[in-house]
Image (cartoon, rainbow, N blue to C red):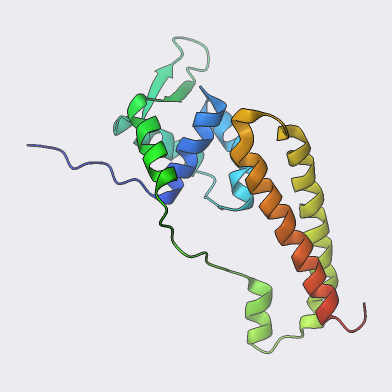
Amino acid sequence: MKSKPLKLTNTSYALLALVDQLGEATPYEIKQAMDSSIENFWPVPHTTAYEEPARLASGGYMSVRQEEGGRRRKTYELTEEGRAALAAWAEDATWTPPQMRDEAILKVFAGGDPFALFEQRRSWHREKLAELEGYLDEVRGNRSWRGSELALTAGIAYHRKMLEMLDELDPSS
């Protein structure tokens, strides 16, 4: 009986792209890299860095190597099939429209005072902006991280625009 092909999700592709940039990586290294890159625009559960590589390996998209002794860590790397799937997905011009999940806006919709949230929100956007600018400094000019550089540039523009919008909406600023 033929097994059902593994369904790749957008999160699967995000992980394939990350491991493609990292080369060989352990789940812990994948999680660390997720925190400073894709997590800023594609939030994923913490366990994804540990579960999804094994799932992708079972489908032939990654290879897995386990240490013989010591901590017996597993290391994952893209296979040719994984690279081909990632390239085909990345080249496909179709995409799903973005979704916005913003608790502060939901509270305003429910009747909450938007101005009470402004200073906390400004602070968060300033901190995130500084974080992304730091990441951008680390990857700038590295040709293998060109996609990361462009994604970080988009994230920086988003946080700058959000700060502008908050200033525009807040009569006290």
